[in-house]
Length: 54
Ligand SMILES: [Zn+2]
Image 1 (cartoon, rainbow, N blue to C red):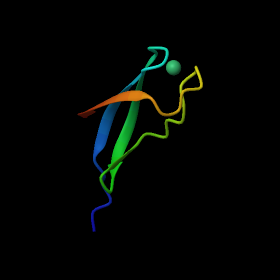
Image 2: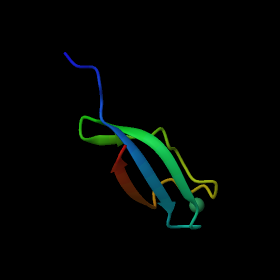
Image 3: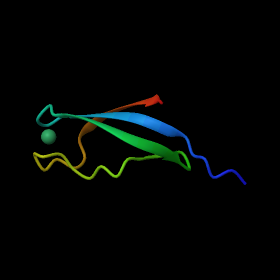
Image 4: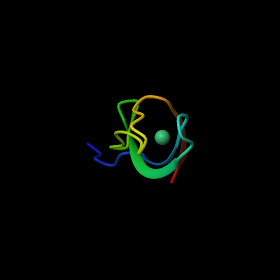
């Protein structure tokens, strides 16, 4: 078994206030896991998400 997971650089832009976040994440069973919960403006759902392989 190989424990190495795909690491990603994740860029998140809030569609509500326009704030941008750059996070490190990984791909877990086809889903992106960043630990990101919500924006500083309390928006939790309306984001533009872009990923790049590190
Ligand atoms: Zn926001």
